[in-house]
Amino acid sequence: MNRVVEAAENVFLVNGSAVNWILLRDGTDLTLVDGGYPGDVDDVEASIRTIGRRPEDVRAILVTHAHADHLGAVNPFHARYGTPAYFDPVEVAHAHRDYLEQLTPPTLLANIWRPRVLPWAVHILRNGATKPVAAPHAEPFPSPLDLPGAPVPVPTHGHTSGHTAFHLPSVGAVITGDALVTGHPLSPTTGPQLLPAMFAHTSRADLLAALTPLESLDANLVLPGHGPLHHGPIADAVASVRATG
Image (cartoon, rainbow, N blue to C red; front, side, top):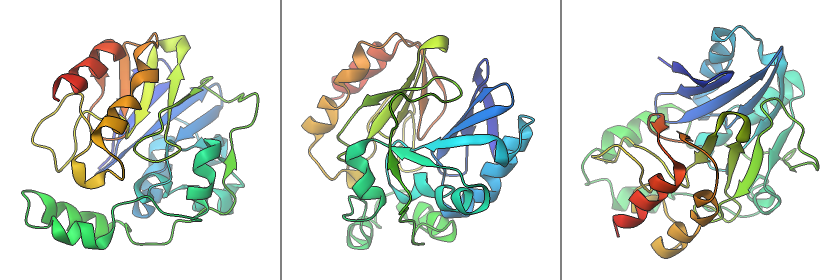
């Protein structure tokens, strides 16, 4: 069951069963940020109806990065409603699957003995984690990016080569994707953190460096790709992550 939280006026964080997505509403129009797993498509549509809109009202999908748990609605929405999907220019080739920076089956199997990994793996496999999600229609952000909610891309290249956060200046919020999360089924703690190391394709130093563009944002509300809504200055959230070493 999804939990739809109005984090700020017309800004909704949807906690799916294993990943979040965000809805930005402006009158009758919406921006969808991220799209869940392939098995979440019906839930994405249901969350849109929960806030009184229709899937057809989504003007575009913004994607923080091209992992399977964020691409689920991208192809179905394009096929059903003609919805475009926009990415950081560096991430477009990843969305096209010209290359892949994602947890691989061998890495998953090597970690299956760890606490909480097996039930999580079973859940995501049932939710379509291995289904093809290449998005050949993926495009780089248009300039200017004029979408409901007025999201502003913030490059946070690290979790993937073209990972992007989105600042929402009008409400003092930032959508952090997987660059900074506040929880995960594999994590024993909640609060600002990096994802578990098994998800990293680069070094911890690079992951921490990717957070630097977030520190100067005027934002007191963090909408992560995984975990609950977080209240507090984004600079403090980043400092908390850095303090863990």
